Length: 382
Image 1 (cartoon, rainbow, N blue to C red):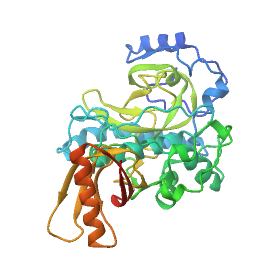
Image 2: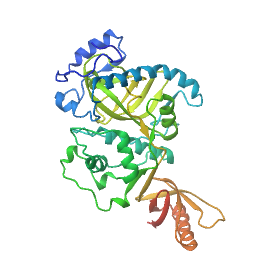
Image 3: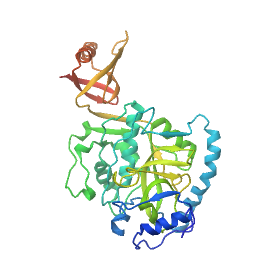
Image 4: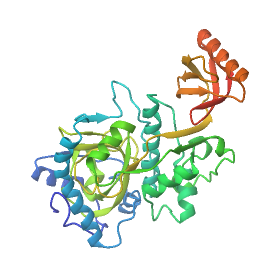
């Protein structure tokens, strides 16, 4: 059995089959810090489990130990960070902010090492909803575009995986389209291609914020913008996680994995993470992992302060309106998007859009608006 932080379990043979009963025995010896159970991932072959870990491990064991040692050190940093970040709440969960849920549904990456695309997209979707204060926002971005197009352009495949910082950087520079414009299948075995109209249906993070190794900055990122990515080392026992606060208690190192952090809880000393192995795994697709565990804060943690969206909203309703005496200074709150500014090449056209929105709101009629970074240039009333 490895020690609790796993620093003595480095690169070993991952060919052993997962035995959940052995994990339970190890948990019993540690006082049951979390619950293990059979799930769709434990029932896979070793090869099919490991391929879902798509963050390449460092080139040598010393680098692996270095990240684990740094992670072990962050446990003390959480104590000092609490004092330094006194303005932060002691807990936060983007799934329940005053009763509002800003996290999109859990997805399943399937038999492909594309976890970085899923962790990055999950962070972008949550940030887009949270920064707009639009709970339940129906935003579904394309992991296929991010992984097969952008990742593929730099040699990333299901077999060798990727990292979140370059993935988010390419998202910022090139954008990520929506799922319906490039649907995801593992290894793109569905043969889907990128819709040529994708420049008109695109999401772009406004920046890339690397908060690796700084627990206070990670918490600040989550509280302010809703989410961040995180990478960590996965040991064999993690596959059987069901509930509780995960810490490594048994099994060898299997690979690296990327997820989205959507919250934390100082009382339980843990992060709240959204995984990409489907809702049948873990706690409805989520898990809690202890502060300082498995390199969770010290490998690659990155997010953004906002997400620009360029797309038609689809049928939605005008919930609120605001304007003043200044020319071309009118705003509408759309049910699916939040506040947007009505813009046009002329005062007359802008006034006309405002009048259409006033009419639609009063009559309860739906609209479809083309938004570009929060600005509406065209709107249709139905």
